[in-house]
Image 1 (cartoon, rainbow, N blue to C red):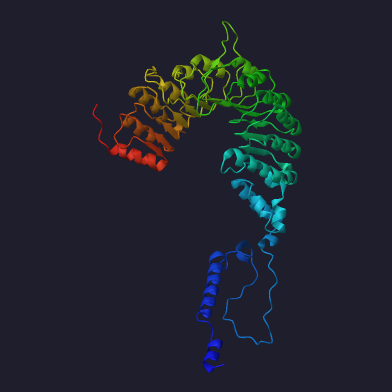
Image 2 (spheres, one colour):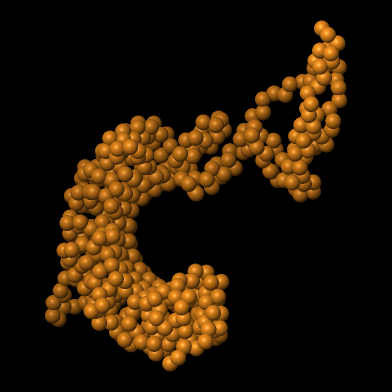
Length: 513
């Protein structure tokens, strides 16, 4: 070999030493950055990460420049590092997994984590991590063909997963199940004896035998959500007849078959029911639902939440001289919100709430027939949320011009959310109503933190006064308020924006009277 070639062969690659120095300096930087001396923490190297752990760690020598070693003494090769997953106690690893599952659900994280190593597989197999599961087949391409194929593929994997992981399952949500919903629910009945909550969203083909079997196989099942799903009324009635005594919560979407389901509730098949919600989605039903108010009070005496969302309904006439019903003594929330004009009046509201002193939330958006005088007669004294907004109402509708002070004088101590959007109260009436929040007894500040005055005749001075009196106000809607200066007619979110609105109102010149 030529002398020049030999010298080039012995020559070390340029920059090799500098690269090693940079690697060691980066390691030292991370070590001092994450676990400086005296901090009470130490770093534990893993396969692809550094774990910061409390307590003193093994002594670590400073990185030094490597010295040449005789070739007779080869450097010992370290054994395979099992990684921090094998060193960490199983309880701590399960707790870490639990934080991730609580944020994103167990699927697909736990399935992927189980393939990392044996310790991760053992942690991911803990039934405590599988309490709440949402299963939705992935959709792609043609919905009809690809959806059925995706359902079959997911069901095939669940045939192994459910018997081995779902023994402690308590809450299950199924979304977009169409062709395989029957075998899916049959599998749930076989493998999930502790199921307590079931939600079917956009699911089709649920029959009576499936739900009845589920009610028998899951003795702890007490909550059923069937909103936006196609379910036969006979299936729901059969389920309620089997699981009715233990039912606590029921969600339904209104259809022509809802009357049969409500008939079962009126027959006292669910005496312990606490939550009942019947909605129509975005479109309101054209045929009014006739609801026997007093019969519902007798059939569901423990009701705490009643929601009839965007539902056009009529109370069944009580008849002359008829005794009032038992009411809902435990009711805490009543929502009758509607996007269209409905038939809820002061008389209907009185029949619903005449025995509800515990009411905390009252949502009457779209109920234009309700007046402040009718609300003032309600027995609830500690109302916290009151929604009276009128949206997309007809201009020919006659709205009350006065009476809003009756509302704030009664509930100004407890109200923390008030919605008066679209109401026709006069400037003076609104001024007197909102002035009730400035006279808090004992010098305490009002609890009001959300106020919606959209489309009202509120004045700048009234808005300034209520902002000054309610330092906790974090939401204020002033859209379409004709008496306010330009540039301020918008919604304010957060206390900083609300205070900025106050500064602008105080700096703006007074409007001519």
